[in-house]
Image 1: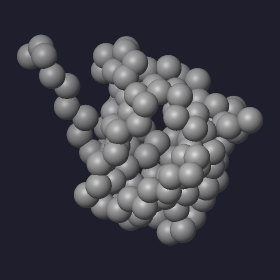
Image 2 (image 1 turned 120 degrees about the vertical axis):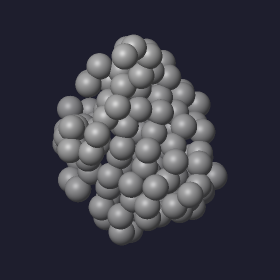
Image 3 (image 1 turned 30 degrees about the horizontal axis):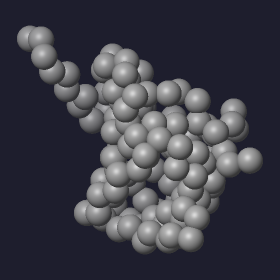
Length: 120
């Protein structure tokens, strides 16, 4: 059938999250565009344990916190997000992302830009 694609559990792999060509410790993601979804729209699952990093979001993104808690700090704004919360960020947002324990996030990004860069 055409018009949809199912990604069954176990049919995809979590890979280290890479920022500025460096693997972040205890941080992983699966990006479904690597498995044949649209080239300009991507989604995936992000997992992080006891870590923090800064980045500039490369595209517009919507994120649903599936499990745990995460803190996003953008300028003077601090957002404490937990399971069930949804956040939308705009391309170019500079933020610090951190968790003291564990977080799992489902995300959708558009348009996809593969380069993720840390705040310099």
